[in-house]
Image (cartoon, helix red, strand yellow):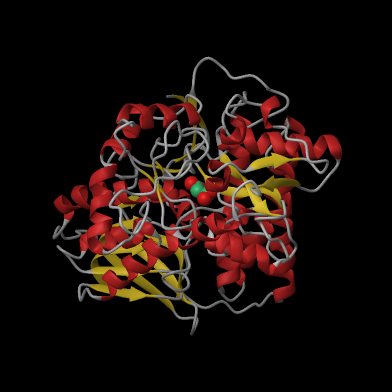
Length: 530
Ligand code: SIN
């Protein structure tokens, strides 16, 4: 048993920021599934939204966030997110994070523009903003004696005591297959999202919804899982399925075109290529279905080569690897699963309904994204809520547990019966294909019912492997993605309308009352007024 004041699970912007803050007051175990930098943060290209310019205002950023969220944002939370942003950005800069300036002689930041924003307000570091943030936070973490980092540890389940208070979590050491329990006063899920539940995603391999699935099994309420945001423009290439072409490319004038060269976004929204992300993704999906084609083009050839190399060095180089010179050639793109707007229900301080358990970042559903996240608000959510959780948690430091017995939700012994790897691989494919086919950009009642039936069968099989086979990272992740597919299906079936990133052809309208869909393992299903 490893004991510390804080147990932080996950190492993206939210987990690393929180570990750094927490280490000022207590000992921290920072546990992560692969290496520290294996996170969605590391891959983030666009940047982090913050009101900086004189021609911008908090009111405008709040308004853009709420419009993008399609009526389902928690307005109080959105206000906190936007108003607290400048302080958190200053903090990142003081830790050493660099953001691109207008020129090397200039002190002014070069602010980017992305879909749904009425002003340029995206701080970025070229097109590798997440990499810069992750690198600097990691450097700072390494300096702290109070933080012990455990890489290659896969979280299996949360550990609750007899009174259902969270006391820690159970992990598989990926290297030697040992199972270890980490105990702490304060447990924080910062495990990112669940894009890997889909066949095609912009997310890294680690995004298997571990935090959401574990919280659900521990009794936490989970909300709005039907709002899976599809990024409109991932590179269409067999070898680079998950490579994102940042929305910032459209912010700099990129036009979406069909194979014949014609543009089409004007038909769908007055903001054209810069409409909120759900609208652009749906428009592309629709054009592809009408034409029975596999991709559309993103055309940024209007910009000079020097500009593109300086502003988008990573995208330029990556596309060139695949024979596309973006200064001359149009880029084939396709939407892919990108971000879960729903997750573990938290209050304004990141607390879940399970005692001692917090959730932060993409794992959480704080209400700031509503039915569709505004571009570049996700890194922001990670840092703003890291601060809020940290401040709130101080009151629980040093409190001793009275519980003597743990009720382990996972067996802590090695299993004996082995299932061949090929069976797991096949189940992985089945779950991800089912999610892609039935819970994609455009849904229908028939497809949702098909998903419900099929995922129930798959889950039963997978849960039985989990109970009997030797534990491996693959089986832990497979169990979690199947749980995510079930949660998305259940939430999508509860919503009898189309809103934001959830579109059901059988209910193409939006109902007047915005409601959250909340599911809980105990109460089974709830559909709540906001
Ligand atoms: C992008 O660079 O297009 C992604 C930004 C985001 O997901 O907010």
